[in-house]
Length: 475
Ligand code: SAH
Ligand code: SF4
Ligand code: F3S
Image (cartoon, rainbow, N blue to C red):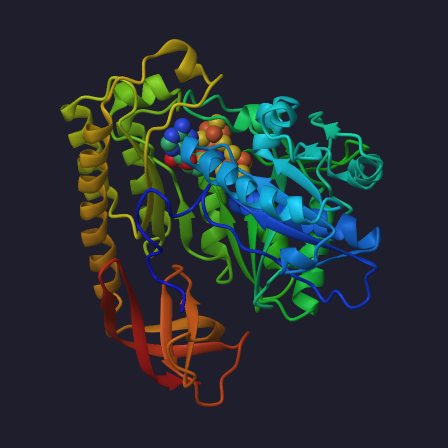
């Protein structure tokens, strides 16, 4: 069962989770095993890697013991994310000792951040490949098979993998992610992403629409357009006759079919425009849900973070969203304990949460990342116990808000998209509302991919999450 409020603490979204992925390997000569860490874009990259490898005769397996190649697609966002990968590499060392022919590769943001240092520090690693170099994987594998260490961490200004159709790994067959851009040009002072992912570039709008159309034709009913900063999406056709901004792209995807839901993430508060909000208002199938990371509620801290907006500016943006899209749900990311953060700054963050009433929040204690602006300019001076206490206060407040948000839905009649069978009961299905809340309801004759109108009857609660339950399905 998916949770309505995924674990609302430090480790909820990026950096720590992994999902071993598999395809049908019967037709492939060799097998690879891939674990992904970090953000959705990294998981989507693993699907691009799977596509490249399949063409080379590798099928994905969920069992690393039968693999010829083990890949870890890594994340550097917080120190803990890197520690998790190091620990996992230690486990693969033992497996490699028993099977010396096995190749172990590190992909993604840690590969980019540490480059050849990885090979010095982790002797068992055979391949190190950065996020823009996946096309060179086949050649690098050949090189590694001859016993050499193979590395490619070149970043690109053009690579978007636009022409590569990702192999959907462990998919529910209903919802899928489509990357629309890569890299990031913002320089939030705490963030390692601009260093690990390089310059921002937007993917050909036609290839985005073609990928979404193909997904729809294969039965998918929801696509989430992904980018670190989707609102700065800007694509110009090679002959310069056409420009597509982010106000247009979700519209083009929404027009594929009214039965295809469109979501997107992440919106930087400085970049989301009224035009985007109007596009959302115009199409019923563009979900009324915006991930709008605030990071801090204090203007002083926001300035140190180089977020380029103030507390008041952010509040105005929230008000504008509610004005144009009264039912729009908001989610956020919060960093607590950033350099010099005072109790007053912390109270400003709590007050901001009270103002915005986020349905979902990903909350983190600040983790200094080498090479970032903050690491170079400021001292990581908030003691760990203070960070932890502030984080707990933020989490506790958020739980109240998310519960309130769900209680508001009780009694409402909502349309949900069915994603699968409830883990708790074979007789129940679960699906999501437009606002991304999970609803469980009696199965009857419904199936995955159906839209069902349900009447929400209650909020089901457990210690750290809650979801809605419904009956009286209305066809
Ligand atoms: N591009 C997205 C976020 C990418 S990283 C955006 O701009 O919002 C996801 C989240 O991880 C960030 O929003 C931030 O809350 C958190 N994060 C990034 N660097 C961090 C750090 N050094 N310590 C703690 N949390 C961090
Ligand atoms: Fe990092 Fe800021 Fe870019 Fe998001 S917008 S990826 S937080 S630098
Ligand atoms: Fe992590 Fe890289 Fe994503 S650092 S959050 S995997 S862009």
